[in-house]
Length: 301
Image (cartoon, rainbow, N blue to C red):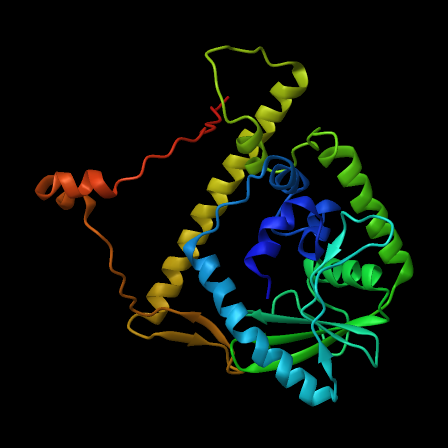
């Protein structure tokens, strides 16, 4: 687990959790968002649910490492932060290391099996594959064991065997990202709508004229929206059929016993903000939070 000091220092380095984003392969962050973090210090705002997941991951980390070590007969060490011998801005904070096998150890928790392949292989999510490759390159390790606790009780083991070609290309791409963007302050091109909101968050009252390419893109977006509306209507029609079929039943299964649909009562509590504003306006104002964001509305043709 990272210390508070290590977290503060993360801006100064590219660590294992940054590797996939630095090469444009991360599911969670784009190159631009990583640059905005490292250069401007703008770390992404995490939702309460994500923070809760991360906290539980930290809580389970020791038990995952202890269990995996017992299963494999490892005597784990827990090195301090290490750095690439040639590129000191590349760092590694290992969950653990087994000196005898020269293997990096990485512990994870997961609520879903999606993205994870056959245990005993390196069929793991790309973000984690880049992470362990980054670690092995810096540590000069023979590979990595990835120990995963699924859904709080299902322990699985995956293994990455050193792939020098992958690691060399990864390190080269990370160095390119750091030297071309972080050291110069030149942002990489935006690649997601979230990037656009971050980069172009200020507005003025100017108007620009669309060129032919932009007008074509506008028409294509309208066609996509029309198709999506049609698909939504079809889905709603089929959903009505399922509701009429299930009626009071909570579960629909195939003949082989596979669950196809569940339709159960669900209770959720929420605050009646209209009533609070009317009956306790001072409290409403005290706990209100105002945010400003740009909203893109694409008009029809």
